[in-house]
Structure formats: structure tokens, C-alpha cells
View 1: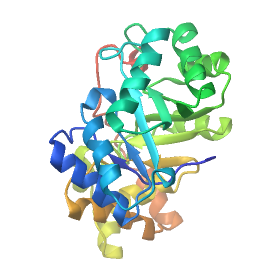
View 2: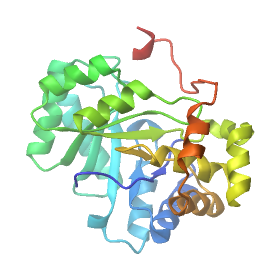
View 3: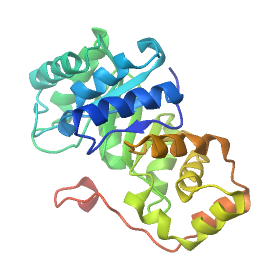
Length: 268
């Protein structure tokens, strides 16, 4: 797997077990092949049941999870044990991608990252990812990682372009995964996006996801739990924006971040 499906299902806040399980199964049966969860979300078990409930063989699905400093911890042994617990909850023999969720708490690049290499060497995970890192922290990871870095996951949408992170991913040939790609619904209030949506007869969500997909090496994982939203987001794959429309979104004069915390790396 050198790259990743350009749209996946995000499961943040999808914490009602049966709703989560149904949304994962529905997404996979529609055509999604990338499911993203995390220790911190508290829904790995429900996600695993959804994968099993679907009609799609496990080997056709990119299953990703994340280890969190406040849950398992990010020390060497904690990473090894945390990954195994995620596999147990997901009822899978391996993860396609395992991320460091945040470079916080007891995260230590010289201790945490070699544990990810061990997991990969032992077949527990196929690929190593990081989430919510800065460019400098990503470079540190790449210096300590034997395996190639496969993905960096961070907030990105038409109101937060993340040009530096995207260019770094492209230049260093790893995937950038955009979470919160609809800016928690704020894209629906942007006149430029609504005008493009009206011109194509599609939703503002599809326009935003198509804009993300227009970037090389970038995929999106919009969260959705209802059948309608899951289907609508997947329909964005059929929408190709013109260069003029991409430029129009590129020039939106707003840069708003919706995922924030006092100790975030980008505040250093």
C-alpha cells in the first residue's frame, strides 16, 4: 500500500456502539476502504464489529487507529501493549496504520518511535503514522524511524489550508490525512463553496472534499454516522473541480482552526 484511499470514514464522537457499528458496515458496503479510529475515541470495539458485519474482506480495508498519551501512554512498553489492546478491541490480527495521536505527555521520540518500528517488524502494524505534529517534529520522527513514515494526520479544510504540512508531505513522499475536512460544518456557511455546489448541483460537503482531494498525497476522513451523510461524502469522488474553482477556494480569506489545545505543537 503505497498510498491510501482518498476518502475514508472518520469515527470521532461516534460513540453509540450500535450506531458506530452500523455506520462502519454501511460505509464499507457503499465502497469506502479506509476506516479511521483511535484509542481515545472509545469506539474501537464497535468499529471492529462494523468491519466484521460488512461484506468486505478485511484485507481490502485500510484500518487505522492511534495511541494516546492519556490512555495507554507512549513509553516503549506502553506502545507495544497499547497496540495489542487495540487489536483485541478491533478483533483484527494487524493494523494497516498506527499513529501517535499527539506528541504530548510522555511522548519521547527516542523511546516512542522505536516501539513503532518493533510493531512493524513483528507484523502487528503495516505502517507508521503520526498525528498533530509540526514539520520539525515530523523530521525528528523520520530521523528515528527505520521504516518510512507513511502518513501524517492533521486538521485541514477550506478554512485551514495547512500549506506547510501538505508541501512537506508531498516533498517527502508520505500521505497527509485531513481530519475535520468540513470544518465541523462551517464550510456550509462559506459563500464561495455554496456557489460552486449550486453550479454542480452537489452539496457543500462534496465541494470541500473534492478540493482536499485535488491536492497530491492528501486524503480526507470526514466523520459521519447517518447513511445520507456517509453516501453524500462518498459521492464527492465523482466531483472534479476546475482550476478556477480550486483557486476560488484557495483564496478564501479565512484561516480558522477548530481543534485546539493549550499544549498543541503548533503553539510552540
